[in-house]
Length: 128
Image: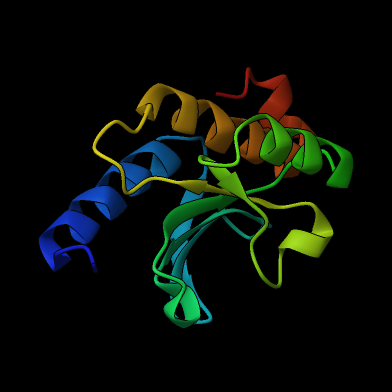
């Protein structure tokens, strides 16, 4: 059963607030989905809803690589999955549609992903 549009917009709003609170974060569409990047820099998160009809609402973030990605999926396959396209590069998808989403955990994963792409000057200024 598909999520109501209002619920998806509310979830996107939470993801957007978390991502855009990070230093120099900006948003732009990437392949039709909201993507979050450092201004004039790399993407650190994407919002995904029912991508190619998969029925999932998720936020996609970077990991340190496929080893961490695999450990996360193995530890909690109900929360994490390997997303198409970005998954082979070590990105992870975090399901965020559930009523019991741990938004502090999601925020930590988004911030960690931001740190992986942030330029040194932002990190040296104290980062997040």
